[in-house]
Amino acid sequence: MTSPDAAPPKLERKAVAAVVLGNALEFYDFTVYAFFAVPIGEAFFPARDPTSSLLASLALFGIGYVMRPIGGAVIGALADRAGRKPAMVLTIGLMALGMLMLAVTPSTASIGWPAQAIVIAGRLIQGLALGGEVGPSTAYLLEAAPKRSRGFIASWQIASQGCAALFAGLVATGLGFVVGEGAMGQWGWRAMVLLGLLVVPVGLVIRRHLPETAGAGEDAEAADSTLGVMRRLFREHGRLLLVTFAVISASAVSTSVGTNMPVYAKATLGLADAVSTAVPIALGLASVLFPLLGGYLADRAGRRPVLIWPRAAIAVLAVPLFLWMVRERSPLAVYLVTFLLSALSSINAAAIIVAIPESLPRAVRSAGLSIVYALAVSIFGGSTNYVVNKLVAVSGDKLMPAYYLVAFSLAGTAAALMMPETRGRDLEAG
Image 1: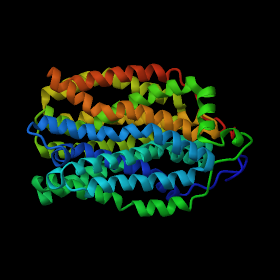
Image 2: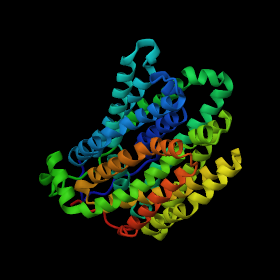
Image 3: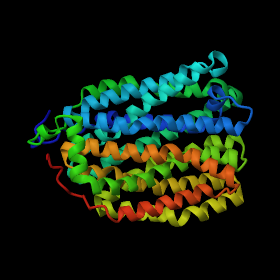
Image 4: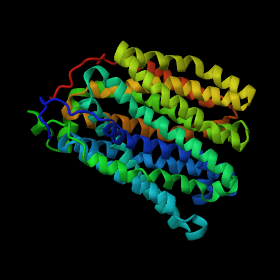
């Protein structure tokens, strides 16, 4: 490991690509699963009632989030003790294994209950990996980036998610036109998952050859175990963790409401399959462009303004936008609402991903971000798709996703007001 006082390694473009690949792969899988929730439910949880099958599929999607806090603690602490690089190699390997298990497992109609057991195990493995991915990879980017552009470079973590969503939407749309909706429901979603796995070998090779940025400073002895890292983290930074938990929870709900839009357009608004298929394109476009804008603004104006104002705007606009979309029930309305809400959330997320690790010392930076991110995403990101669809089904109110989004955005805005300003802060070793 490098000395904490050493100059950061030169951050090459291929290194940035390799680091953000894990986040991209996560969001690619996230988008594919959200889009194909109906056929996945039919494959592994067949039911006479289509709604029950869909809800079972969304519950499977949420199962993976159970393991995220464990992955955040174990792998995040590993990155603080042994280095960022081994943790990043481990997470992308486990992530690929979980995706492969989903893609190749025969349906329940073919092999019975073992199919359900295998895909559940795959989601748990994937959840373990994803819980430990964001902390080490973001810490690496911050520690290797020039101080004046840390926000912009870290924003590629979020932009990579948009790239993945856009790619998933374009491929799903093109493949659907070529093979037809029936084939997409039968085997097309499996092909989509396998396609995402093609980038894993490249990511593994590049990640293995990255220079290490984690320091072994004078506090290394205090963090010589996972328990040591956890003890220091919660003893010294408990209040900050609570605040950042609320900030990330609001962002996770926004992301999930956006990725649920294909299901919402089809199941709730009754629009055609072709309309819901193209929704991830609007989501992806916003999520590619606006995180970079958010990172740029965070470097120029500071982290706090970008944490506060986009989240407050979502709280104000969500209900009117959903009301307009429900009344119009048109493809244009769905695409515009998805794009606008995703753009605001993406700007906000870029500030989140840099402000939180900048607020923590190097010895607990990876574990801190990993744990609070994993907990927030597990509890709220993993449940939002299920909850909002269930609320709509029970209440009959099509605006339930907007109400849910507003509640969390108000809480996220209040929490952001308590965050410290970290622009220009030295990333100290202690």
